[in-house]
Image (tube, rainbow, N blue to C red):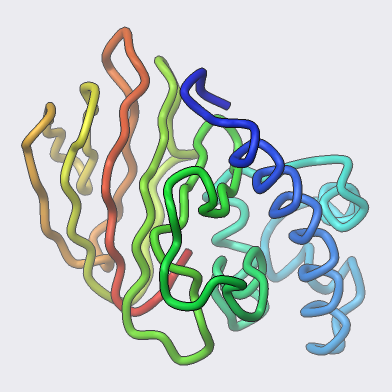
Length: 195
């Protein structure tokens, strides 16, 4: 967790991380999968899924994406509460923060079933990176708020800093990493909701 997080944000992170295991287990059981079946579909170990479900391990965002895809859902459905408690407004310090490996996602909006858009602030510590490149349906647009990142789109690499923006098809293999000395923060919007 980065140094800027307030106590309320830290408790939101713990709550969101704890909910992940419960939501993952529920989604797996609803889909009718055993640990072995889900592990085969997501190309990971049964042990990892068991640890995530028990709240002992936190998956990277790429692994979380693979699990969501294997369950025919999205990361938002696995990590979010059903309904925002304060209506449509999510105030600073009160937004849920989801941790996935070295990267955290601060929710700009709480995903709802059937949502067309999903927006997060990706918080990437120095040397933090996505876990490889992922591919899925949709489009993505982003704006670097702070820090320096390298955006990977297939074999192409782009260095971006504060004020730089990007737009690409989610069907292009994509990933990113922090190449600076400070935490990077990126406003990232997906359509349809993926994370």
